[in-house]
Amino acid sequence: QVHLAESGGGLVQAGGSLRLSCAASGRTFSMFASGWFRQAPGKEREFVSGITPITGSTRYADSVKGRFTISRDNAKNTLYLQMNNLQPEDTAVYYCAARGDGGIVTLATFYDYWGQGTQVTVSP
Image (cartoon, rainbow, N blue to C red; front, top):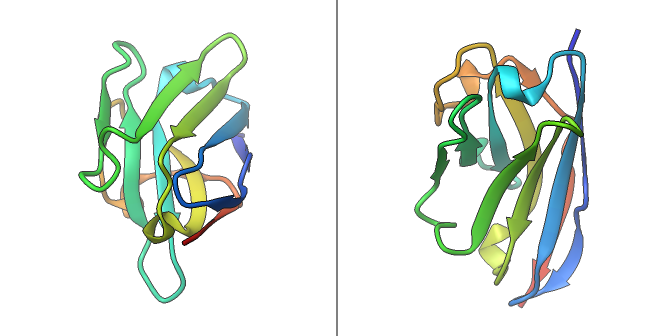
């Protein structure tokens, strides 16, 4: 019913920027809460940022506040994550996700749909 596909990952030097995209098929992002998670090797999947369906309210993990910006283009049914001033600790596989309810939740277990992930690697 819902398919998510991330793109935009890559290799960057510390201080650089990347813009991740997540294209959705099926239900539109405007109908549910969506966001971004990341997972580094040996670590659990952690919340990065989320956005609500109607008001577009956003939330960020403390570690990325001021550097990352989440946005949504309802017409294109695409979710974005602009990442600036990337640091080595940001290295991880980034996943976009969506959940049926409209509220933002930071636990990955509450999200229903996931993309395959896109690798982001930041060199020192």
